[in-house]
Image (tube, rainbow, N blue to C red):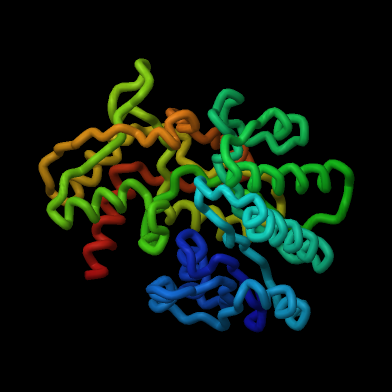
Length: 328
């Protein structure tokens, strides 16, 4: 890209977004962050690297109108990320509407577009975790919460635009993130990863707690997730922006489900702590909507040409704990 081009990252002060923004800035790109910084320390996610500009989300479309020729790509990570959000109007306003508006803008102006979808679109997993982006395959999925529905609605809208021949960005990707963990997630409150929660608890001298299983076919701590290190997510986004052959909806996990007990043991090892877990009952409010197994099928991303290895839980947690200790 020319030196005067701008890479726009919405949600760029958030978890995945700030890691993408940092990687772009560190390779010398001019990065525009679109986000609410709010009251608190979210700004710290931006402090280690140079940012060309910061734009409030409610001023973003106006900003775009004045910078059409300068935008190299839009990486849209901005959204409500809470799976417990109950306000449907907020989900439409902050998750659905901006995604569709930016998709349309990028198609109109021939700008590459990467947006965040989610493994929450798969619901309870009864239909599997195949990232088939056809309208027919997407219609079979049944998200279990409003957050998952908001991401699924955008996937379905884009799939219809593609199949019906409407304009699309020259390169685009919807990334179905699985259980992402890693640096710059501390601001996420209760949506922080289990890896970070365990690290914080153990650092404070408290007991490591995990949910009991409430299904006889899963042992306590045996609930399975596809835990993916945020550095891998960044690498995939950069790869998509660098190629011009493939577009579509792609899973972004490791392709290997691991148990929460595996994750806890990785944290214990990285911290040099004795492994000991206290089991607690899962809250009634989420018990009926809890996923016991997620595992990304990674075939399509691999077939599209992404060849880099994906980080194991043990290696990712070790790197993350080293980073956390370096923040003291």
